[in-house]
Each structure stands twice: as C-alpha cells, then as structure tokens.
Image (cartoon, rainbow, N blue to C red; front, side, top):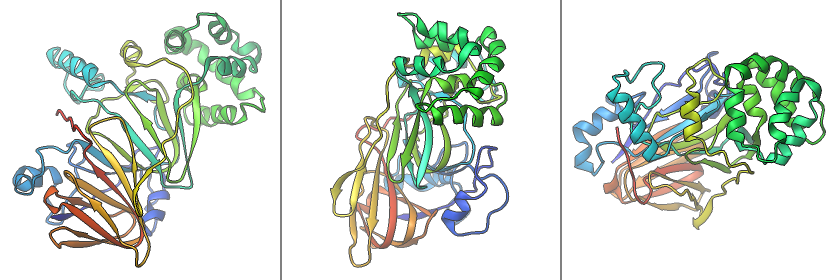
Length: 389
C-alpha cells in the first residue's frame, strides 16, 4: 500500500516563515513554521486521507500490510530561521536507565523537569535541502578554541585561564559555564566575544552576536563558542550520534532520527537544563565533525550510510525517461523535495508527489518505481531497528 501522509507545520518560535512555503509553492502563512512530522510518533502523528492519525491506522490495520506496531524512526522537514537549543541525546543504555529512574520517581512524562520521556536513543541525520544549512556540532579542537578565546581580551580572562591548563577538560569547562558562577560571568564573556575581532574566527564571532540577539545573556552563547560551526551544502548530511553536542542554526533540511523524544539541553533555551545529566551523557572529545555524502548504490539512487540500526536514508534523483527502482525492505516513507514524481509500488499502486508531500510505503510493496523529474528521500529501517515507547 502507498498511503498519503500529511501534517500541519509546528509553530516553534525558531521556525521560518518562508522556507516550507517556498518548498511547497504556497503563500506563506505569516507564522513560524518549524517542522513537519511524517511518522507515527504520538507527539504529532501524521494524518492519512480518511482523517485518522497514522498511529491509529497502524494499530487498526498495519499488521495486514506488514507494518510493525511502531515505526523505528521519525522523518521530518525542518525549517530554521533562528537557532534551536544546544542539546545532546543519550545512548540506548543511558536512556533505558534514565527512563526507569524517572518512572520510579513518579515524574510525569510531560513534566517540564522530565528528561527521559521514553527508553530509546535518538541518533539523528540532517540533510540540507536549502543551498546551505548551518549547524553547531561537537566541541572544537582545544588549541583552536584557545586561539579564539585569546582574541577576546581581558573580558574573557577567566574562560581563557580554564582552557589554558595543560590538562583542561572541556566537560569541566562546560560545567563551569552552566553553573551559577558561569551564568553570572556570561554577560561579560558575551560582551567580550561580541566585541572580539579575528580573521580566523570571523564567522564564529558573528554567530556570537547573532545568538546574543536571539538569547540575550544566555550562557549557551558561551557553550556555542566552544563548538564547531558547520556549513552543510545542499544534498550533504550531518549525522549526530549519542553524546555529541549540537544545535541547528538556519536552513531547510530533511531530518531522520530514531523514534524518541529524549533531549538534554545545554543552552539557548528557557527550558529545563539538567547540567549533571547533560555532562553524564556528553562525549567531551574535541575535534572536527565529518559531513556525510550519499554513496551511489544504483542509477539515480544513493544512500546515506549511518552506523545505527534504527533507520537508513536513500535519495532518488530522477529525470524524464530515466526511472529509478528502489528496493523496499521494511516500512518506508517517501518524501518529495524537488519537481513532480510518480511512485509505483510492486503491487501496482501509484501516487504522484510534489515537494513537501509524503507517502507511507508498506513492506508488502517490495519495491518502488520512481518516474518523472525530481528528487525523493526515502526513509527505511536500518539493519537492526530498535524502538521502545
């Protein structure tokens, strides 16, 4: 079965008023439109043509078509006009322990202070659909951060001293930044960084001014100063495994993640920050991050190879007269981002997709034939899907 999916954009403050409208060719609503979720996650399940939510359809009929009780992944369109919170996600083992601890403590799952809302991990992949997509990802190599902070003058002396020790540990520096002492020091540090000048780190210092405008005095601005600033070209991905600090800044992307809502925040947010748990989950190893290019696996078909079993992402780029065949191993979701394409399943069911439209592909279809002129992303389970809800 090919089952049309739709959803309303989520209106988070950081969302773009234009990017999703431009993608789909409609008039902007004038409201922030941040994310469109295509999946069965109970936080915002997609809708099918008869008005039921996807999770309800799966519960009612999914087994007849080989669909599992829950999808192991969540596919999204993400459109950021301003920075999201700095965050990190736990490993599967950490999530299981943390979820059980908070369940035993009787903390409501929707409580503001709740950290573990399920027992699953949340590795994620973002692929740029706009010409560029900006992000912060991982902690910058220590010598480079020392050079950057050294450009900031006397106002950043305490941070510079903490970074200058031969045995400086970035998790200890982060603990100070997010402590009461660090929060007190944050306005002075941000002012020093805002006034800083450096040819080597011009983009990073521009970002400090941008973040301070959006989150005045937030210690997360200083956390961002310790992170790698990454510009992702269109069609290229960034994979974020457990423990890696990250924040999306601006742009339109296709995001695919394990089905989880476990987030530990590290700044640029008014929401709860559990510093101790953040540091327990964090991988403080500094160094650059690698961008992920899709590997060609067939004519017009490529795969973003990620080291997790929950999901894999394919991209099909088709031109008139050159159809692409896509094997479907498990339940899939196809999402169009360019042009107009026709999808035909192995059971001879078919659907036409335009940018922003998505369809669930049930396992019994076996394969997809994609024709037309455009681009389609296809989410599928990985080798060993794991989901816990």
